[in-house]
Length: 442
Image (cartoon, rainbow, N blue to C red; front, top):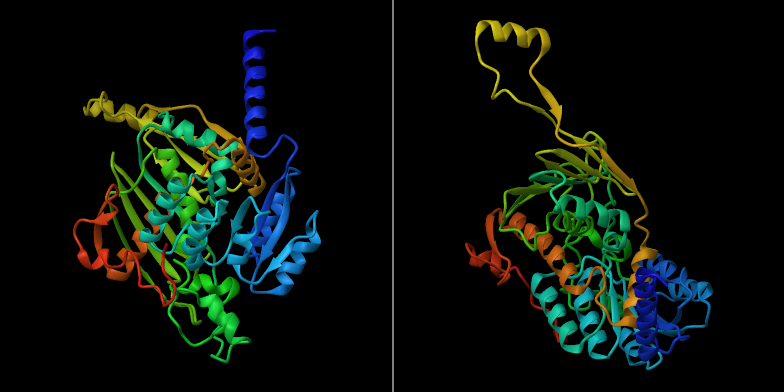
């Protein structure tokens, strides 16, 4: 046996031993799902691709969502109308939280305190304060945590991040990201207010959020357009992009943020902007932006990419299933004297231009099943996941402070260590909100 084979064999024995200590070598991770609409259904499907877990319990406000999940499951899960009943279930080892954003913190903290490992969808929290409390609770209870920023488990994107951090693009001075979709003129529509289908269901939906009259756009998928329950597309899509950019830059947090935009053209009852530009500055000299254009779908960059990183040696374009680096062609005029004869030569032959690097590209999958696989492995090994709670919190917080900059129409300086603004107490007061009684953050 070669040294490398021996090391691999020894590592596999150690891994198998750690799995056995936690659950038993042949045991499945028993999963409970809180929230099974849309994204919750997608995450459930991702876990069902792996044979070492089973759906033990489901919880949702809607029976039809739970019944749909049960029909897919290998076992016959128990149904719960209240997530606290699911957390009390001793047969559940780990939970997936895929409820609206304003419920994440309460359910996550309760799950950790109940001894469950947690996969929680992004964006992690509705406020920066909630996110930090979630990190503290996860560390105190020693739970395995995964935030649903699934790009972190994609090998081809890990390669991209490592390439940029190693200086492959040179100094990255600009990183841009985009959410482009023309929703004009009607958007999500403008339904009239009405009585809720069920007062009890509406009360459960609202949870810690303020009590407001029912409107069907405030429930289920369209909640993302209302600030009581979501940070809008800046957090919905922006968290994915911010996390990828932070990963590439190797940076923990921005040092300043500002944002402008509004509801300019779409005729619906949304609260979030239909047009927005957010801009962050990071240490080391990088401007990062998120552009939300929901009234025009023309491409924002040369490749219709989600993310663009501009370095001194080349530009990386990141798409859903591939990335590509286009080298810069450097024009060196420093050694080109400005005499009449030389200018004539330049007209004839042009200035000296050369590529700063070789082209580079990769393809791959960012399927959520990869993220689920990482979580299941870490539940067994007790290692930290690829998007552990601290990583997810910092990427979410960066987008949340941009929303605060937009709401206060401010240029805000950010102390990422203290998680406070250094130049605006008014902005600091928006780092959290007062929960509606009787809800309290644990």
